[in-house]
Length: 619
Image (cartoon, rainbow, N blue to C red; front, side, top):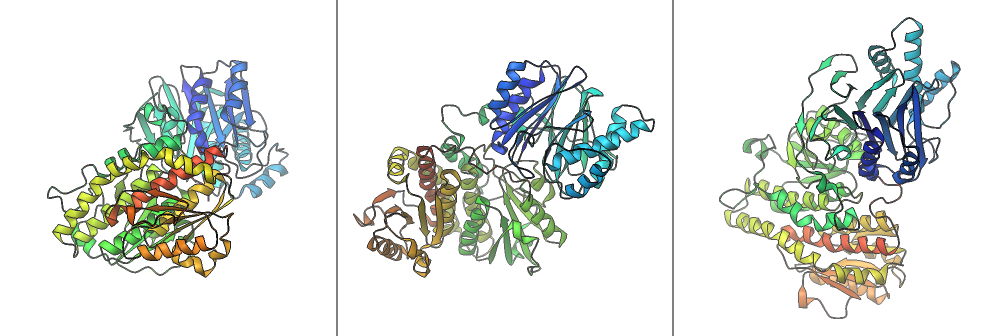
């Protein structure tokens, strides 16, 4: 969640750190701060609010240090105050630390340190950790150890061995002005390797454009960086041979360009995201999909008689879409569970169950722990994720990369549409292994290939959707209704609206409206209803009529063209008619745009909605 950036090298550190924090501000933005080594001590600049607030302090001071650490915070322990902002400096002024994660036993450790006379200035678990390391470091020096990296690393390892919970940390020491340290367990950290400079960050976006050579740290690893080299070891002090990866996207991919917000940019990138998701993934005969990274052969896949999908938030909605599509086209029973609940339940698991975990970042802690639980019980686990070399991708048995490019906006758009399109391709792939005919497979392949063009067509309606948004921006309650495959899209539409505009919104199966939610219908509660052609089209129209009979405003999204009755809804958004396999993909575009424009018209910060962060790496 929080953003970490560390630098050691030949340049002035503060501009590098501030630029990195701006790139990571979507990860956490309650407060921000920097710690720089200056003249034998630390200069710390930290403040509640956005990065630019701290940036003004740093710019005014004009520090010249070539080494430092920085942080954008998403509060877990302690309120949003200057004192609780990171970095935190140890009781003796020797160490400064930034931290992403949760130290679950911090209260016990704090009592022990307090009993030794150490005083605390914040409410955070992070200050406990830096004081614990400092105490062990000081004790070692008092006993005759040298003030060197070996002594500090020993103190770090001893402290981290006492910690329960998760952490990604960056650490600097006044005794070692040209050295930077880090460690990881459960919270992502990546090393950027430059020329006579090195970086440490929670996300490669922090140093995009400065280097493309990276090392993804694993859990229980410690890194020691200088400007011209680095070493990675384990918490137990075993040597690690780091694997250097080359990232394949440029800094421009994470820049706004001509768009006002990342969310809008990423909505308009969706045709490209869909093309990338499909590239090279259809058979030469045009009858099926193909995936090279599942690491399961056709015989093993035919033995699967149940699939379990796990995800959180928007990814959970993508899992629901996968359930509908795979059951319809592959005839395999599918279950969907919240990843956050899975490992705390003792749900029965059948022997031939295949598990899929879905996470854009590949670092969502609940999903990662659910994956580990499923693997612990002996099940094959595959992933659908957007970040190559993420922890989920490294630890599972295989999977499908989305290739959507970096997604910066907190509210997922292009990653979600990529996930549900891949779900359709997966349904086709599994269906052709069973009883789906060659001709039906060919029809579905053609339908999937037409989707990017249809999405681009819907995006040309942005002005029309913005005009509709102006009519509904002042409402405080919304219902989203959809039947069958449209139910997950109703859930996703409601989530998008509530998370970026702060309007209370609920998604329901349309037929369930009569079983309770209809009590909410009034002129003050609009409804967005999906009404697509098919066997339940007339049922969907009846649901809308029930709302209108109670004077509820209605926005309808339909692919029925002229078959949709004039005057039935207050506003109608027409999308192209399409194959059922693509209906969810097309239907989500208007709700993304509607939510975006309503939020902007209400003055909300759509890229950094309150209380939310992009990658949820704490439970």
